[in-house]
Length: 168
Image (tube, rainbow, N blue to C red; front, side):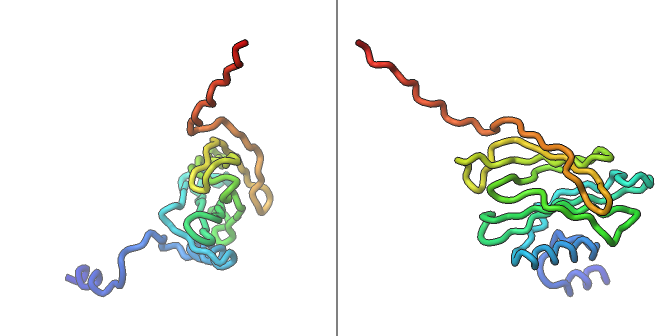
């Protein structure tokens, strides 16, 4: 009965925000700095890896702050919350519209590997086509980019029209 009453007293639909104020506060600050909004359904997480060697799980999240209208100016950040310093996350910008958008996070201590899609000059804002990635490691009080790679175009381009030499 009390559970039903509690549900009836809640206003609005459920949200995907976490109950952790450290994460939600960090995201709110970044969104305010950029005069943007964040949509939590696009977050990428890893919360099982031990990056600082203390045998306790650390928490990695990539989140996107949207400036403007529908992805025309998105900025992505990675935040790492270490079990040894849970109130001092390490934050770095990792993606941006017209450059690269992060689509996956994999953690293999000591590395944090981010799979990305990079933009080619002809790509629409919605649809980067070049598979890429980057790897970060803890460095002092921050995160250091240690490796970048670029693979190949993911979406096939239409073949060029064959050129024919005029017959003589």
